[in-house]
Length: 207
Length: 207
Image (tube, rainbow over all chains, first blue to last red; front, top):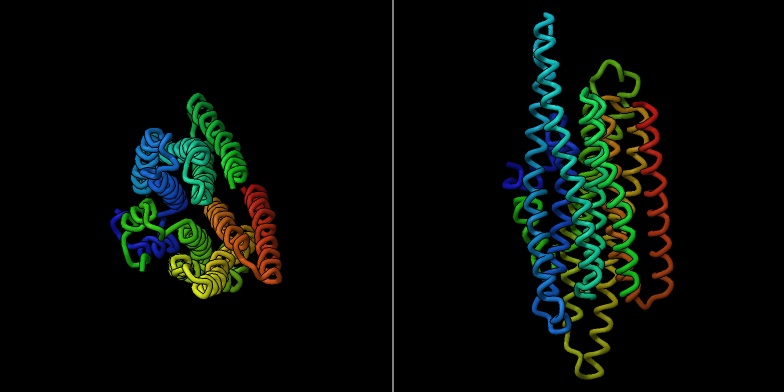
């Protein structure tokens, strides 16, 4: 698991010509960094007298941003595994018509998994940015640039993951599923772009 | 050095209430991931017959994206150190007028270092996005989404680093330097926002 290896090892493998890790895992890591910065701002708001009135809400926000961080960390690895299974299915034999049918079925099956992982990254990035909005409203005013930075990194995560979702949707044959997943992606991206603007303007207003 | 420690350790420290690592180092890591993805696309273009005509240029682009990655990796650590020195200068004694003058001088000196590090992150992110544009034009068409993803991560790096630059510029008293560094930041951000759009549209045109 890359999470238990050094940053240098992860970056070297990301830069290499091997198929994984790729952009999907890098997007998930960007989301994990964004969640970590949101958590940091929550922690720097806890037990501060000036923020006594919001302690309970900040505590709940911190639990959620830490859960988001954990999930992004897991998705880094899940993306690598889902992409690996998809790549393997493309390499199945396809000489006979039976082989071609079996390969096509396997590819279609693995495409779903390889799409759901980056879609979850995009949806969690949208949720994280909504949490960042609330933290920007009530969090410690001394460290609000970090919550803006968290939202920016979450936005990068969502936009990067969206590229992977769209590529896989283009290869998928189940039109109903393609429409449904495409709709979920659009909703996440709208939340992300509106949310980042809102975080910036809230933080600007409190500076 | 965080680069030699596990991803888990870095993310846990980023999420903690300790002053470093903070948003500046996370931005530099986002830049390093962007450079890594650009390098991956270059490596997947080398020694491919279909791209015989661009081998020398891709080889030069790869050298540059790998240098950018190395520099982003170093800036992760340099940001932590520069921010540490700035925080220490703010904690100097300021009871007497001599102490206040000494503290103010130290803060102003450390503000310059703490600004130049994220400014370099923003400027290198701008350069990386320009390299991504060229890679998008001539690189392996099968993996172009990774170069778009690299540009997106570089954009997050530049925008995040810009927050840190602006905060420090507000506290700096040398107006000439503030104007000069502010101008450099604006140029970098313009290159970044125009460049990401261009990478997307080049990749879209080749899909």
